[in-house]
Length: 265
Image (tube, rainbow, N blue to C red; front, side, top):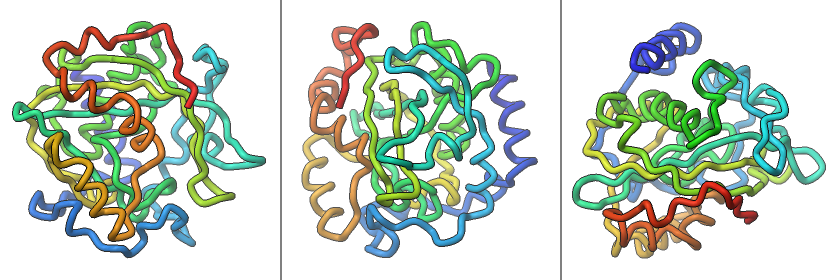
């Protein structure tokens, strides 16, 4: 598994150079980020070259029961047309440290969907590659999550072993990013992991990061909203439904595991 992630990361560096620079400092919290390019409707007029290269990745198309029915490029999966886009498999990682703080990120301003928005630790897609198509037990999405945690946040996969992940449930949702060009329509696997990690955020993916305690979250998000920074729709949905119950029970997450239900939100 470690060699597969290392191979994927080497290829990623070669094709896009996304991991070539790690300039962001942990001293730049989300709360200091200002209004520029943070609107729900802000989409770059010209796509960032590195982000555009990622549009060739092949995502997993699924039906409404999460059965894989094919694959399509990330570009096709996120092109919003007639109020939707193709349903594809995705994941949302919520990483808590040993002090029970949740790691949040603010998406970079060059992201194609929801640029500049605040969201949970890491959100992305399993790809049509060996090891990431497996749905049983969330194994494929966990492998994809470890890969993306390394790419986006510089987290060594050894610090987030497969055994540290709790696959809790799935959520089916869709949302337009700019009212007509890009959007999301996802079968979202929700993953919770507890680990103390070293961070080296990739500025092409992540604008800022911050650890937030449970009692701070409501005020933290309110301050960002007042500053024009919106949450991603999936993070808002999860925050409004289950997040606090999970957060209060990080030592007994197994009680929340439900791999049969697909929540339609």
